[in-house]
Image: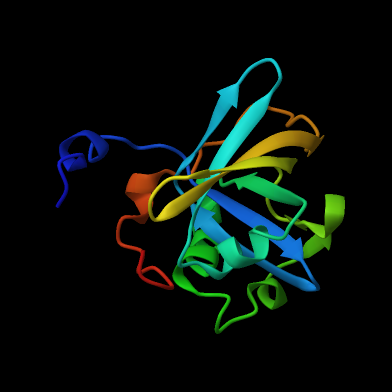
Length: 162
């Protein structure tokens, strides 16, 4: 328990799958720490655990793709959050295509963007990747579907310790 727990316990943000490719490798992970951080110019930051294989791939990547998960994407959240790329090829289990700079775009997730890595921010056990958008999914007809939220995944056993 930390002194910040009473504050963070009430937060219930959306969850994302972030994918990366570099040096002939690709990986992706479930992310709960992410946010737009600038309006003009548009910028977004995703935070990757330094214990995660995705972080090791992302360190050498040019771009990252950020997928916003819908409530019916729980199986995808379990794959990218409950398995580790050190042991499992997650991309063998999902349809995907290479996007900008080879960053994988997951076919079943219609809400995504790819950002060029503009900088990195040390943050303890996570590193923030500052992204400038270079490709964005087409608009969604019929409005935004219900999003998968952190509280809905509290029981998910992570693929590696934090």
